[in-house]
Image (cartoon, rainbow, N blue to C red; front, side):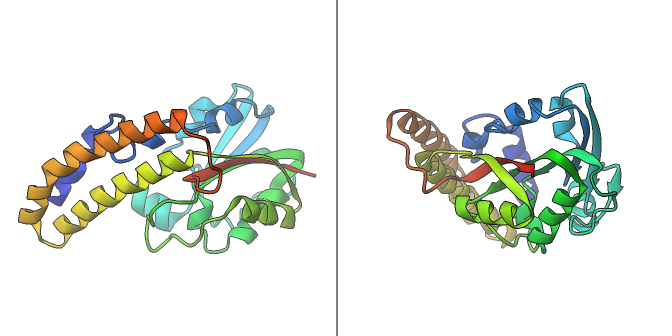
Length: 241
């Protein structure tokens, strides 16, 4: 039953029936990627290399991932496997580094950011994204969340200068996203725990409530004043001094 539920959720991806519909798109990541300077780009935590097709044609893409997550969980297709805290590349060898939805999974995040700074040329760009108000995932490899101020502290500590940072969702959309994930997550855990009869009884409720929450919170967020204190995550750009 649990595998059937996962297949149903996958079939609903991209529609209002999916609990993560509010996160559709990259919320600014693709715009930043398209503005990267020409040259060598390292994608740390590249997974299936999805971002490569968004890069400018002048960029030379290199994908890297970590065996315990990229290979064992996602079937990643990197050019090489390595630990982000010990990147096997020379100093000042990359014009840009991408760390998209990766830092929360790093056991030593500051060391990894320092490695990114080391391999960047002066003036090189780090693009990163990270959830903030979002459930634990890829456990046990989920270690931290940063506020806007935490991000500034971390990038400045390794010699980078924060250029811009913006939230991935408005507060009202974040509340809707968390509500949908709580409903779907509880149902999935019921299936995992062998309570399939109860879960099947609740499935129609989730099928009705999730799209309602998605549409209502999306509409309200269009009209309601923005509140920056509760985003679902952040997207940022930083430059090596």
